[in-house]
Image (cartoon, rainbow, N blue to C red):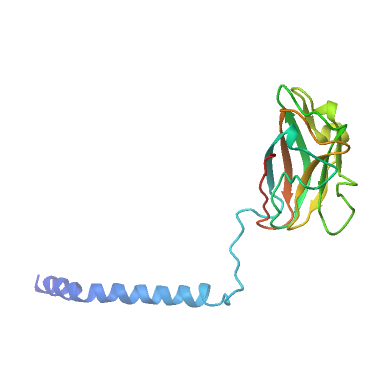
Amino acid sequence: MRIKRLFLKVSEFLLPPLCIALALVAYSFLFNTLIAPVEAGSYKVPSDTPAGTRLVVTSTVISSGIANNAQTSPITTAAQGALILDDYIITCNGTGFAGATNLELSVDNANGASRTAATPFGTILIGDVGANDTLIASRVFGAAAAILTLESGKKVYLHGDDHEGTGAGICTVDLVFTRARNDATISAVNLP
């Protein structure tokens, strides 16, 4: 009985320091084997938006906000990182677009094939985006109709080819992107 009491008394004094010592040994082991070998700056936190993931931005466009033959009406902000434009969808209200003969989509890329206002990547007859119309580029023009890489720092523009837009028709333009780089992003801009 005395031995048991003695053991309990000794363990009351030894147990807390023993636990602290074990915790320090465990921390030292983890630090030296798992954390310390990673050199400063060599570890990158995995991206929440890795390359290959989809991004859809939706711009609302009023017909009278469409410019004539000029990249003065962006429907996106400047891309932050390279993005691949896979498709676009235009959905109109009960009025739709009016004014120009064609509606055009272009980019201001510095490299590759020119896709400026003079040579747009998307040309749509204005009659195809009239009252209550929905146009899905990949279905109308084929699977590769809209595929292009939007360079970092560049924008997507919407314009008419021979006249600015007129009227109060409202359409949404959904741009479907795939990230070419981790964390690449872009935002919509509404017109006007």
